[in-house]
Amino acid sequence: MVDKQAKIWLDGALVDWDDANVHILTHSLHYGIAAFEGVRAYLRADGSTSLFRLGDHIDRLFDTCKLVLLKPEFTREQVSAACIEVLRVNGMKQGYLRPLVFVGEGAMGIYAPDNPARTSVIAWSWGSYLGADALERGIRCKVSSFARHHINVSLSKAKLSGQYTNSVLAKREAKFGGYDEAILLDHHGFVSEGSGENIFVARKGVLYTPDLSSSILEGITRDTILQLAREEGIPVLEGRITRDQLWLADEVFLTGTAAELTPVREVDDRPIGDGVVGPITKKLQARYFEVVRGSDTTHPEWLTTI
Image 1 (cartoon, helix red, strand yellow):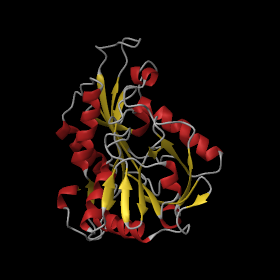
Image 2: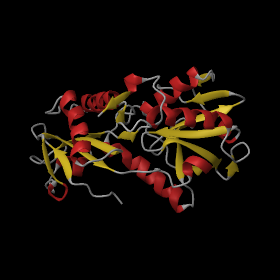
Image 3: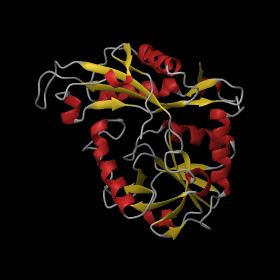
């Protein structure tokens, strides 16, 4: 359950948490056109608070808006400043932020071009997304019966609220079956991503991940791990991955702002490697956390310190 904070930023003003309400005829509630992001703020080793890759997240928020012809009434700079302001006013040293651009009330029906584009930023505390021991022990996954959207059916590069129905169904199916997370295939049967994470596979010292022409979100944590892997001298290949390659992998892990870098120890009741977190996963996970909340300062361009 989301822990209640004092204030939410809504359409340019800070309002009390309980007063940040919208009308039941809010268009996005009915038709699913809303762009959103997830941004993490970390308390670092030196005691400072930094938002991780804030600019990249806000750029992707506006890219999603562009893809669905949604015109925010606030600039990138204003939304970025709102993220910082929400953390400050709520006295949060670390947390998860949810910038959201949505279509407000007015006309109903599919086409409502004159409804206002509204913007909010919410912050709350969020620990390990996939469970208390997920980062250390890894999780159990199930390949879902639900396929990821075809690239001509939806906008795979948009972080769009309505498209997450697909993820919700896959996640429910996995959880009802006793697993921690779902892995979805694309319409061709190749590995796509998790319900809310990108996926990586390690095999014989090489790291593999689906390429950006696949039906996947262009993950910011994914990009971070690709850069860190290359810095660590780990060979990386982007391309198609089959289900049996997934089963035969030495290591598998998921990445995302919420999931961070979460190891996968089992897929479809088959242990991955020896069923424990492998060396490549451990190395990249350690490096990632050293960058976001430790003393690693090799990427100052990724940190917005407040």
